[in-house]
Length: 341
Image (cartoon, rainbow, N blue to C red):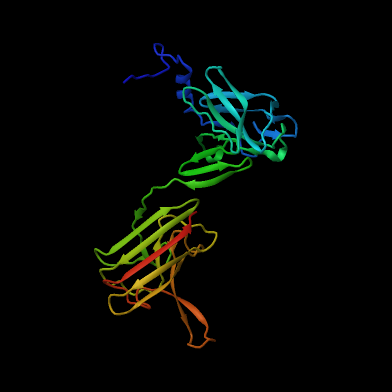
């Protein structure tokens, strides 16, 4: 086994292969462009014996390539009796000490790219179809096949962002943003694969002075949550009391792991199962932004004022003793996804 490291005073980059192996990690093969809509190194056909390669730059197997002006590349005549599929490639050739744009002929299908790590290495720029007996390529017979090389993710301060160059990514805290040329847009939030946990606080009402509900010593009171893409949070709360709390006149409320947006109400589902012969029910929970952004303020269940089709539907708030006397062994579960502030 032979080890190699460079560049040092006594261990310099001595061969093109050594350079290529190092430099190719700085950037992927491809055209330097902000988006596929750019014209950098784009090939066009105009029905003449040439195709035109636009100005631009690229990486090819760790080597830099630059074309400063529109360049004509001759089309190889097709003497066959059927259409031929060719490629325009960027070819890095250590024996020629150069990267060049090359017209490469194929057959019924496009030619295979040469990709020898220690020798010739090609990346595609365009596919050209040449009709039988022809030596011209029209605009409609050019298929853009450019590979593109990207930009690194850069750390960013929200109040001091750099210009939103298209295709640039930025990391601000746990948020990943992508630029589209005009604006910075939230792509997602870095998150753990496993949900985080918190201890929900249950109160009678949402006011700061609300009474904390005592569900009994040793009760199961657990909350799990996970940040999703953007400003969304999934939460699941489960309560199994070991006691019988007092009867309060204010609705049951419970804290969220993260504050919700105050733009509008957030909706959750809840399920209650009694182990004391009182049955079970399902309903909806909701935040009331005018009261609190940190709590599910209501657990509501549907009722009507009669049993006919004309009966007026309504909903009521769950209390500690209405419509169920919540106590030892009962189970209350709340689940939902909401928008965080």
